[in-house]
Amino acid sequence: MRIGILGGTFNPIHTGHLVLAEEAREKLNLDKVILVPAYVPPHKNEEELAEPNDRFKMVELAIRGNPGFEVSSVEMDAKTTSYSVETLKAFKQKYGEEAKLFFLTGADSLGELYTWKEIDQIFKLSNFIVASRPGYDVSKVPNGVEHVTITSLEISSSLIRKKIKEGKSIRYLVPEPVREYIIARRLYK
Image (cartoon, rainbow, N blue to C red; front, side, top):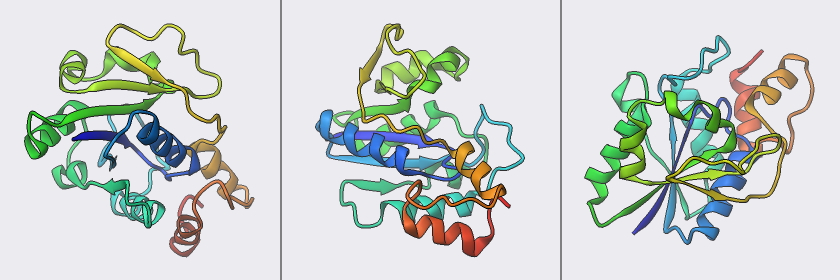
């Protein structure tokens, strides 16, 4: 089995995340992509961080109807700082050694890669895949990292939060059920 793992803060999940996951699934011939919202992300220090349960629910709403996607609560259930190496170990244990894991991340993560906990172990547990992202150079990916080109969308969670604060529309930047959830829960105001 070939399984893509896309972790993230998903604060909120947006169309760029979904395009990355779907195109990686197709290009890497993955059986499925599991989206893993972080409970407490180690590299983010944001006071604008929505509650973990809200971020998890938004991922659930965003992927509804796509049989190639799943959401996992593995990091939420741990209720501690989320480290990719621990998540990968949990998926190796769940799916067995014969499962091939593909850890998916955006090119914006490249700069901080060697600050990640046990990065060498992450490379051993998975095929580490970096997806292209506007404004980030992927020509110099480190050894052990593969690159996949995806459709370029200049969308970020911080842009979405900024638009919400300014009272601007986020329609089409996030799936409609996510937009409705954000409005109903008054997130990012």
